[in-house]
Length: 119
Image (cartoon, rainbow, N blue to C red; front, side, top):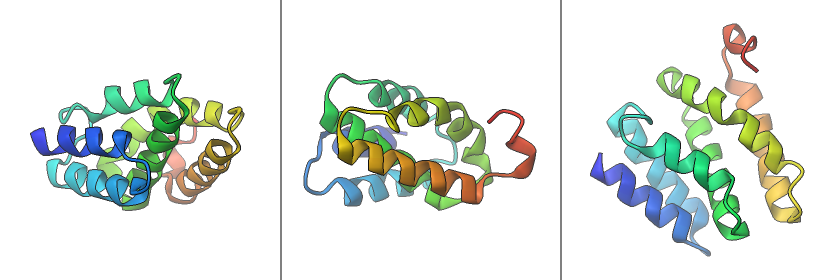
């Protein structure tokens, strides 16, 4: 669990290595098997609503990396965060908008059809 928190801190604090840090977070969450137990869900959701654009962009990158894992066990947490990612599609910062759109497309490609009632 500590590995997940450390990976999340690194991912949200990184600038140039954002994608690599997000991939490391996804690997740590995969090893833990649960986002909520690892403390990643709440922190990532808060980061999506941060006032700092760099943190928001990193949070969207982390969300995309977690979606790309395609793990069914993560789907409830990811679906719960989807409204916050959809909000980022209207962000003032163009790079965040583009990353959020890519994240939503990635989520729609892997989401279980039975979860669409929530979406």
